Amino acid sequence: MEIKKAEFIKSAVYANEYPKFNNFTEFSFIGRSNVGKSSLINSLTKRKNLARTSKTPGRTQLINYFLINDKIHFVDLPGYGFAKVPQAVKKNWGKIIEDYLTSDRKKIVFLLLDLRRIPSNEDMEMLKWLEHFEIEYYIIFTKSDKLSNNEKFKQLKEIKKKLVFDNEDVFFYSSLKNTGREELLKFIEEKTQN
Ligand code: GTP
Ligand code: MG
Image: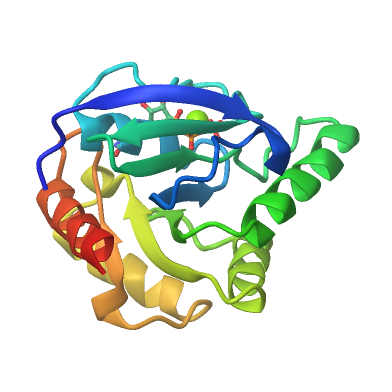
């Protein structure tokens, strides 16, 4: 798939603020703060500042909707796991995400995990939620540019001690180098046609 058009539609918190129902497939990006969700959307769309990125984790506390090629949505979800966020914000996050996951929309979720880190308890919780709500999801390992091939292999082995997944169902991505971009876009295109 070639992305010819990408535009920011709106920010939302709860379901009544999502874009009007239009039967577009939504591809949403979820994961801990700073894992690289917004950067990945920018890399896919080849737009530097479409989704706001930040070195300060926890910046995006909203659900941001983007319209791609006038026919699918990309959804940038607020990140979790940032220790310095006040308790009230954390509680609110849970409500926002639950509302989103239970919403009656055609969605495919990408769970982003930092390839350099062992998945946190919150990552595991997120995975359980996705399974509980029976949501179609795939794992993307981010920041793959930070590891050599050797290190990658070792790290995967460690991650697999905590997380069970089929190799076919995961992606490796570097937003810095756009590695994995073509493969992910192809996958999104296939999923759009289903
Ligand atoms: P929140 O909005 O806080 O939930 O974070 P986020 O998941 O949207 O992360 P964001 O895209 O803002 O990226 C966080 C930091 O990681 C930024 O400093 C990015 O430049 C950096 N980063 C993101 N992706 C990559 C990558 O593939 N490689 C490298 N080296 N750095 C990355
Ligand atoms: Mg972000």
